[in-house]
Image 1 (cartoon, each protein chain N blue to C red):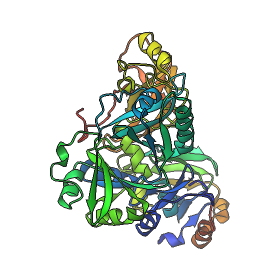
Image 2: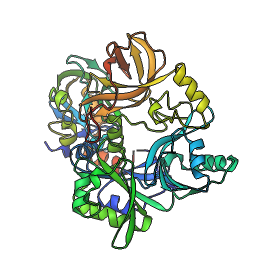
Image 3: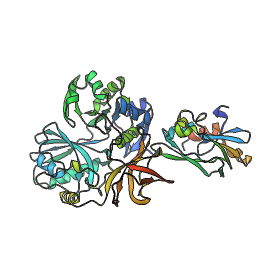
Image 4: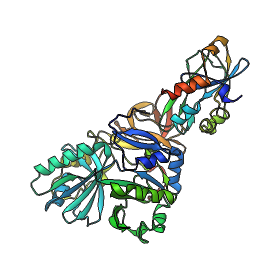
Length: 127
Length: 374
């Protein structure tokens, strides 16, 4: 689906729902503010985290930014390509630059997330 | 991005940067381009082609008087006695304890006239300091602030000089001119100065002109395919080259000897100079801290204030941390306080947020460049 159908968080993560599996990454706005991403340390498959826990950190030469779990869940897949080419997050934040896939344990968490339009409004109004 | 105050200053090239789609950042009260197309792309352009930087925010001062040479030799550790007109030195303004007030380049532009280029973050401090020293000096020397009169564009990269020659900004034999030399030229009745200096480690020069002419030169350079580069690339380039940044690697509590800049001190210079006693003592005995370089085994950027460990013991702190686009790993400059017995390059690690990453002690420059040999 187009990223316009994704859900978003206040902390700039996007979520694409595929049943009870979520594909997660960071937004176009977030990658632009961060700059060239040169390092990503992916979490381990199997890790169980709660909503708002720190998922990982993405790093550019100028800054490091935390990426947060959007829901309670378990990491079932990580995007290994980011080890060698972390800049996929810059060039393709919604597709090839996806970061983790999560099996959501509490589906109700998804309701609290923003629509793409609401996220865009939030960005335009300034963080 | 940090807040931009309503009192932010802009250079004469602001509109040019905006037209090129620059993202701006506050730099000590100046609204400067952080990047245009991206830090890594700009960094690469300078390492392999030619890039330009608006450095008009930097300051300039003129020192004039019949005792100007003696004054300059008192003011800075560098020895200007043998510097002929048109020649320059990289040196420091030191306080009485040898602490660095600023690093700067001073050019001898006349028998009794000198021209200094100083850091944007230190203009007010430097001018006040130099004028105070001139007043107390037993001799005739006056310091005037010309920072508002000059714009400056740095042109850097292995292809930079040839391209400037091809478009008629530099004479055909420029490549053979001595480093740090300064010349004045004219084009279309516009006078400009060219200093064979830079902050990237690549060959190139810095063009100084009146503010009214800045757009004229910048547009010509853009039209001739010089890549516009912002402060982000400027920082990663200078760090790869091992150059200090005032405020990070240099400050008033650090001497040139501690910062690995002993080579800038005129040890054989006749007469006293500010900070001499401390510097001579440090050279003779030892220093309590020393600036060293590191190359990480990890791709993770190193950050200022990361801890330097030797055999897991904390022995120092990172002052300039970053990422080398050429080496594709973290690099850093930092101060080591307790020198371990062995000067081995092994056994070091750097700890930021998270676990420590092994790093090799590495004498900068960290990469080979068109200017130096590695």
